Image 1 (cartoon, rainbow, N blue to C red):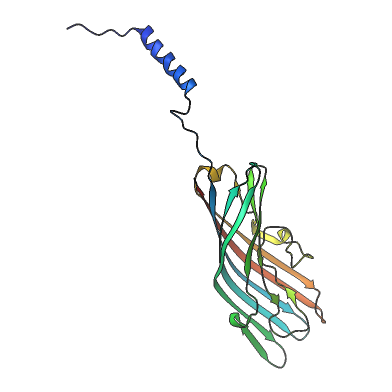
Image 2: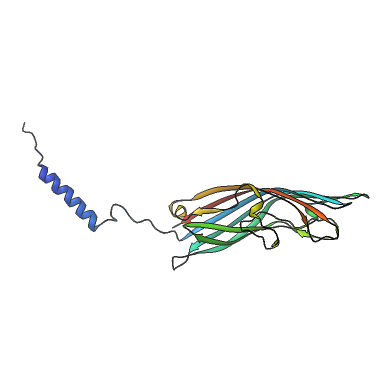
Amino acid sequence: MAKKVFNPFFLLFLGSLSLLLLAFHPFSLFPEKKTPLWWDLKIVIITDGEYSLKQRKISYSGDYTFKIVWTGSIEKEKDDADYILYHKECHLTNWKAEEKKISPELVQTKRENDFKQKPTFHLKYLLRQEKKLHFHFRVEGFPIPQNESNGKISLHLPCYNENTDLNPDTEYAPFIIEGSNQVFLGEKEIYAAAVKREFSWTWKLKKWTLGFDDPTRLFNHHEAKLRLSITPHY
């Protein structure tokens, strides 16, 4: 039986033809990946904290825990520069708090149902910077003390930016003692697939504070955990 002999020049011809076809039809084998029409966005923030205010004869001490779930979406602007942010829902799914006022006369206690204000989450804007997407947020808190007092101040709660709107006199970032509140993603990541990230940090502040008739020493501490998930839709 005769053996088949392959002409090497014929094989070279087939290879050259394949390269030529690929040059004219590059997307037949490697189709271009589509740009998502929009992305679903979900942020979950969990915080445990404590605070105290100490004066000459009166002291206040409180602790709290909460979980907030924020959902929305983003889409790319037509000029291919920035992203448009849409808010959908925001729910406080867990909220517990207690504050005690201790004076020479008596001890008074307020719990979460007595607090007139509850923590609320605000995703302020999405900043595109150096091929990264930065999520600027703020948790708006409540005034302390909740018990009767001769003054009130706003409690610092987790935020991204350096200052909160309610506390312009005190920077936030310098008092982070562990972890980081810089919540960001690489921009290329959100085009490839769904992305999930978790960020955590610990914040602590001790200082003399204004806003009271008597000299008042403030202690404020919280631990925050933020989960971010973003899903593309084509």
